[in-house]
Image (cartoon, rainbow, N blue to C red):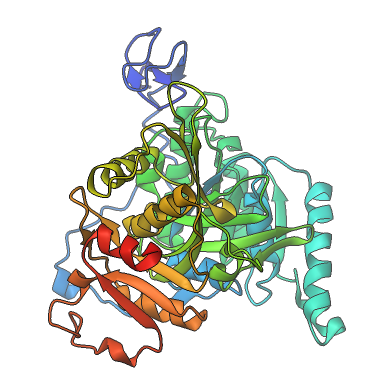
Length: 480
């Protein structure tokens, strides 16, 4: 028998040390090191099959040309937003990690997904709730789905038909039930509650999270069954557990949103089978989560009169164009140091835009309080909204409203030039579809006269396209 070896792990970031440390060298947190068992008995190699032997099969190297490949067989779910975020559906044998704040709706999203797939077997493993608690939530979701159907009785018999609930935290018992049930999809809620008998440490520790994830990863790859893991997050917004957890899985999804808003955003952080910049938008209702197919409608406020300090900008999240409302408030500062506050936007980039407006356009903003807000509770990092934010700031400063049917798509450089943005055709098409009459874009998006980089004539759009190259030109056209 091999000698048992111990090590110390930081419970905040997963840093490993041979001895106890008061302060973690990686994350600078204090009193986070806990002793855990590191060495296991080599005679019992953990596998997900209960009847498997201790001997592992040895894989042999294979040439790339000899590997048989077919098109990705994706499992299409009834949730179109979920399919979009995953890159077109669930890939067989994939391991997906979903993180988010407590109460944001992670368990509701996955249970709603499991209930609405009656043609396949879904095993929902919960280590946090009892069967009765899950049944209460499932009854509410099933009732809503049944109400949506035109043929109520037939739909009600199908919703939740293939969903099986298992309340268990031991991975060995979970795999035993998986062998008997043979599900087509497995949901684990949550990975921090599982524990493996091969590791002598408490559930939720770094060693347990790593070992349980490794066992689920082996099961997913060997059986071809997709597995969804729900993960907790720390106070810093990072997924709890070691950083290697995010490297082991195939896809990392972040479920985020403001508790004071009804909208939730499912954002892709990592995806081996699709784009890593997609997002899906949901509306949190009393009866569950509802897909939002056209996010521009919820991000734009409906108002009857023109107000100063409000502009509409075009942004891209993945391949999806969206129109967002940007608001600015500029007022005299009653104190010596003016305030700079931004909600949903980078404060440092806001300071850069204010410096450009003061240096290149001559507006006195150094003694003014400036507040920026992106409506809808979302956070935008697309630099294409720079032009819309600058126009909103000057509109509030001069107290001159901008026409509601005007939108912007342009990045502002330090010298005051309007830089080109990517996929400007999609932005223009989205603005035209929503009924906007005028859009400001950079002339550097049109390197060959009236043609864009792909040689498409922009005259085919039924919208007034203003071509500008300097920030001064924009303000001249807007405010005279």
